[in-house]
Image 1 (cartoon, one colour):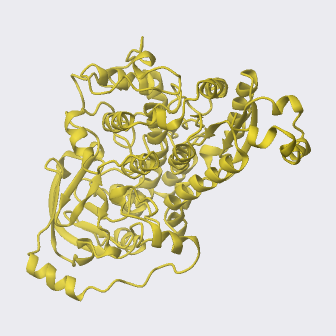
Image 2 (tube, rainbow, N blue to C red; image 1 turned 135 degrees about the vertical axis):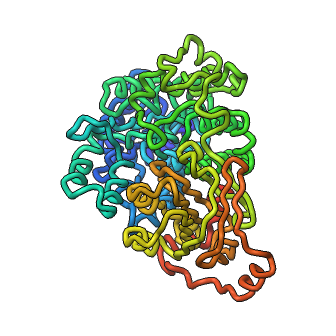
Length: 553
């Protein structure tokens, strides 16, 4: 066993003495040591229940003959970090999580790992670590939050909460109305209830083969979540026994499956950052353009919030991620021969699976749209590409041309939106918010929610080299590459320039001639870094383009 390096032989007597100091027995040290990476904390609603999940996982490990050893991983709550400097630390936490988990796993020579994440950057960070360390590993997330209910009985969620603030500034909602959302949008623990980034990544963990069925959809407050955790603890012992490792499971075919299900589910645009970063750790390079190729073949089958008015608990009731995958296999869109953490192939896992709600998970022959939920747009404004959640864009905004309203930070933009200075037809441009320029590539949920909350979601576009929350809806186009801080064309846009967006054609155009752009480029000077010390400063020097997943080089 790998743990023999710290538990066996006379030379390791000092190591054993430290295990004995922890209260472990000789008998426990003769069993496989399983690291239980628990992301429990008291600041993220999606993580407040993970101590209970960890106890269930450890019970499963012991039941199957292993010795569980728990250690922590950090997590940032994107909702609490939203709208201020804290959001600069969200994406960058992904690499801290991966690095610190690698350090713990390698330093202590575990035989296997059970990862217990839940929220946005915590899931991909731990998947990156799993690929990097490459010892038998299984995931058991904390589960999604239940949808809320307003006082009048309407169901609600966090994206409605953010849009309610825009409604207040537009004069369509009073303080009591805002308070109704405030008190009811987030009623339980768990990852926020729509198909936002956390739930997108937890669902895709199932597709990648790293989590058991229900990992992405069983609600956090259901006892079935504890049973899932116990089974995950048991199953990691099978993976150890058979020496099935993350890179045996996360193959190129598995990532192709993940991008396919991503399109069918209508996942967060952040998956276009995280899947390439995880693949990179597996030694696989995902081409940014592959998204459109897959999208062109993959129908969009689900419209969960923010694209529609259904939630994760509804998806679980319909059969979950497996039911979506089963629909996709009817057209041969998935490679079902891939190995999974069950020790079986995807084909074996899908035996007997049925779609229990064809209204929620559309049949493959009757989709919401014939193409997928995400599109990569290219053009002279984004030569390397940019990303939009097509499934959450109003039909009237699928093509749009309008004058640029240019802002060099999120704060400048939100002040203009709430101040009533954005008009129907405008295209809001927020730049110097990319991975390097931010630094940290902040989410622009506040500006997009303000636009929608003020009734402009069907008439105003937003373009940024930053990114979006999975809760964003509307013609919100992010990840513009190259970013402004690298001298990308978005840095050259001036107030009033005409910008044309054509989502069906996957194009985005700055309607300014090349001679004028060349003159502007000659005058452009890169601004001073916004942050010059600490982790963010180091991150800005190392981070790559969003088109490559913003991996560190």
